View 1: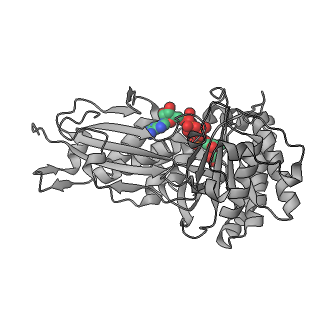
View 2: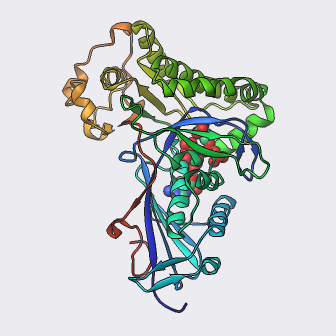
View 3: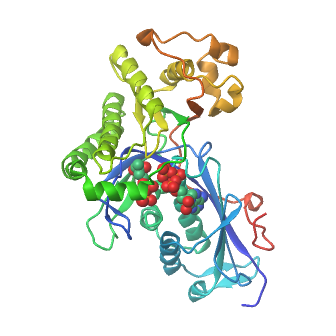
Length: 415
Ligand SMILES: Nc1ncnc2c1ncn2[C@@H]1O[C@H](COP(=O)(O)OP(=O)(O)OP(=O)(O)O)[C@@H](O)[C@H]1O
Ligand SMILES: C[C@@](O)(CCOP(=O)(O)OP(=O)(O)O)CC(=O)O
């Protein structure tokens, strides 16, 4: 194997947001959770990771570049994913390029990996979920791995728990499993992204400093100190998961919204019940909850569900585009951009919703009146950094066009 060839694959993988939260591990190394969780996959057109993986006999060591900067692969989570995927590698032949890799060769060959998130990394937008799912998916394609998405999800899980749910589109369940080796702790698709096409999602990226407690250490502290977590995992989530599956199957928005909001609130209650307490939401997050609760109550049935991960960003799931347009008007009234910002960079993703809300420029934002159910609503410019408008989306895909790869096909180094 003294030749100079480089073989590459590029994949794109979505991020996901949990509507029944994963919070707490029963095994830290294998990343095994204390309860099942359910998520919705977000449209990769707006939030996704692109990863190119390459193999060549010329590479001296495994290397990785994240958003253009070289990072170390020595961490246990990367090492576990690489080891597990290498174990499953099979023979690969590219007759056109005259390349043949035997199964045993994969243990000796080194990899180059380049990855890019089209959204901020470590900003509470689940970059680790999309990132590890994409790494495992792209490597599986490069190495001709036979395992299906669920089996791959059990490998991605060892990179970051929530990553296992990004191997599928639509609504996804991470089954906690019972086995000690984690072999049955994996993700399955509940329904694909077309099943509940009406839903529209608006993410409020709330201004904050970098979060103080990572999900990993936060959930460790909750497991060690919160009695509410024990109760939640044993008594609440098992029932709630079944109800959520029913709500999703029947496209029952009222039930879906009730369960989603209750589960987000209970997760944050567990954080408060942790010693010392963990605060992920801030005043802006609380204000968003109160606006949504008031509006839902005044309508008589829920129009929007809210959920918050380990940070202050609000993920708002509207029952349909009409409700999303109404929601956007309410959000823009209370959280207009700072006077120097322009609407084009303040609302990103699927901007078509702006037109439906009748908001086409800053003048329209300034002219918005307070929502009828909340005449006393205050304007808080600058409290939200920007909004991302998106939908439920599809799972990982392989990109066939070599030009979109992040590594140079000749050298295997970042372009
Ligand atoms: N594209 C990627 N490929 C591989 N690993 C990634 C990628 N993007 C992020 N990561 C890993 O995930 C880590 C960030 O995870 P972290 O949990 O801190 O933030 P996050 O996932 O963006 O936020 P949160 O978990 O709160 O939603 C990075 O330091 C890196 O190790
Ligand atoms: C609040 C959450 O987003 C927690 C996600 O935790 P991570 O998957 O980031 O944690 P590790 O497994 O330690 O990497 C809820 C969820 O996504 O289910």
